[in-house]
Length: 98
Image (cartoon, rainbow, N blue to C red; front, side, top):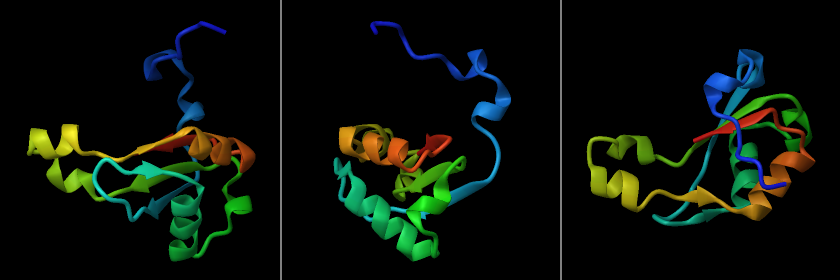
């Protein structure tokens, strides 16, 4: 609709807090996280995608280990694509963190 997304400080705190799960995501640098990687992450922690409804989902790609290395952290981080976004909507995820 052409409107910008809200910043965190413009949202109520319950929009991004609550029950949560951290999914380990195996992905190469610059990789595009999609439904396959998300399904595999769910299997690794023993949760079914349909159980994610209303939950905060954190994606652990391992890039946090490179935070002090600006080049590795900012230039090679993986990300989510449109298909991952559709997957989150399908499973009624509350919010996503990386």
